[in-house]
Image (tube, rainbow over all chains, first blue to last red; front, side, top):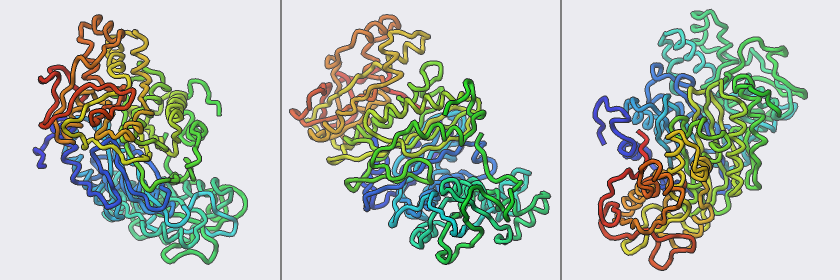
Length: 315
Length: 315
């Protein structure tokens, strides 16, 4: 369906817009009943499912002037797919709810849906249901369902003697966000990293098979996530500054903004890197050891308290 | 955890509030990993799951001055549990996201969660995950997962010769909403029906086992839902006015507001009654035949177009 240019969501109407959205979401073979009924029906192979949910609110988690609708779609999907990745699983199915003001361009909703569908397609997951309703602010609610081939990797399994390891870009999105916040649009590679994170989707299940003892995705900030692991596992974690090679674009942004570029790495989220603990010697290829796990509690950097921001707070 | 009286969500903080919310949600035996990790893990018995999602927005789907927080929790859960009911299934697990302004009383969030948990407990379902974030408006995003013991009943299976049947209270919530909209608080039974719908949770799976050919829950309006069934099944549906006994409180409200009380029944939603089609003779006890299915298209009332509102529109 071709929408009239400049048509708003209210112009097009709920049901016509849903009709336009539905074909954007291709259905995998495991989807017995897709969108359009009271519920979707999914075939499940191995007797369990893994489920996670997230909200994204305009002005809080994204700005329409900082990213294209399709970018917001990519990010919304990536953020949720990453939660299944962090369990060592594979996402199979998602639902997506969109609340929006009636004057939202209908094209924005379609472009958002296309970006969302594209990101899901990178892991072979289907969008099996959704909801569309009116609100003062754009809000996106996503739930993702997946499964694991080995036992899910929880946050609570880290043990003294394990090493802490990271895979995926880390700090790039935070650098991009800092740039956008000052009204700039470059370095472009960082801005793009913020707009469309590239989570290491293949790495979660590899880590699970390699024997990761605990795992989490870095959505709120590396040290904040390390603290979640430490608290859930009842251990202490020390992160080593010299374990991180600060990429050139972050050095440039740090210089321009007068900030320590390592701060983007230690405090930044939104790249959806994976942080996991492994028994020493079990760290798979592609992961970088960035710290150690010991008896005790709390998170330190080079053995001392860290003074900078460690992550995002919602209130 | 006892919250300070009059504390807002911002006062309490995200993580402390989540800590206070978590014990409200008891976990069933099928929940292998509950809230608190990147994802929940659920045991699934029969090789498939049924999934649905819904958004509720303050000012649009509920008003804080028209219902207690616990009522809003009951309604949010009921609306989603009802979607699984309408597939002929049983809900097992839900996720719930709450977006709210920082000045929302933290007690509101707790009371909402208690109402939500109570409603889920009526069908034995667990709340296995959630998200909490900041927005200008209270928004609630729920996803429900369930399963069916027989084939799910879709909207698309109605056939000419079937009868249309209804179970559950219908029109009461619409009557309550009309009363609240005029600033009244009685008849109390209708206001309560709006605040806490009582969907016929046991009826969906009974209908599926009895051979229902199509089924939907009445959330937007009886005639609007009949239209969804007619369109999905490629049939015509005629609803009979004299099939409905108009309950006394609706007669009273109709008289007071100068409205046809049957309008609440034909156009009202929010009770989450079930509307289904059955082969003649297969209608289970507790269901009332209210119409017929014939070849053709569209929905009529006593053979003619219906002039009143047939349901809710979101934009």
